[in-house]
Length: 250
Ligand SMILES: NC(=O)c1ccc[n+]([C@@H]2O[C@H](COP(=O)([O-])OP(=O)(O)OC[C@H]3O[C@@H](n4cnc5c(N)ncnc54)[C@H](O)[C@@H]3O)[C@@H](O)[C@H]2O)c1
Image (tube, rainbow, N blue to C red; front, top):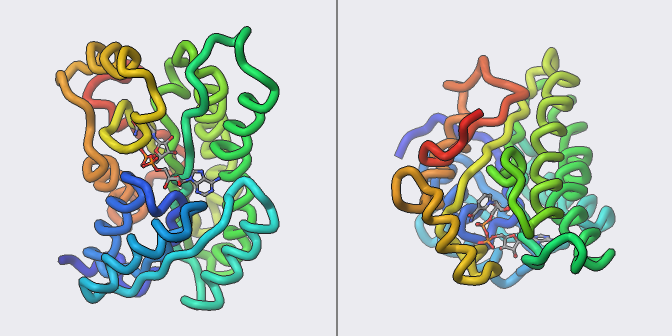
């Protein structure tokens, strides 16, 4: 238990999922108050309860982060409950259907772009006025190595994650003099429920590309996010940091 995030309020989207929960555990261990938001309301409530049972300040919130009305209501509820938002982790996401371009429907494309990229725009836009008022804040979004390499049969996902990297670099520069840092993390494959969205041959193909011969863990991604939101990373902004076990080459 450390106190480096003591007094800070963190909103984590996709907070019922594997990486979201790991970030929540890591943040409360560092003293933060944590708001876990997820379209899976029961999952977010259960994850928050696990934190509060351990003595932490936490709460679960529902909502679809791709819908502007849900996002505005979510941010208002978190500020109402905890007074402010110092840290935002844009983590909600899904992979979409594994298929070649010519088999993708308009809806396959649009839903992944909405959930994985538009959500980052919507939630960041709703949170940033609070951070600008405080002249302090940190935003970390979870991109993916897919956004750097381009993963075949996951074109919408790859494009959305590449968009997060560009969004991070642009927003980071916009608020650079306002005490707000904006970064993203690009993990390679991490063992969570997300992998259930892939055919097992695709998972095996990904494992064969892992230089360490294993996938990452949610806790390993959470450690990078923790570092980025902490004061130890005070000179790091508008960056994409890899957590890829040596897979990323640029
Ligand atoms: N697991 C990996 O291999 C991996 C690798 C790179 C990046 N990522 C990214 O990490 C993030 C977290 O993924 P994870 O591995 O923990 O997966 P996960 O499926 O365990 O968690 C994702 C969470 O996002 C929530 N969610 C999905 N759509 C939502 C919406 N519209 N509104 C609100 N919440 C929504 C889900 O309910 C789920 O709880 C994702 O953005 C994912 O793309 C994961």
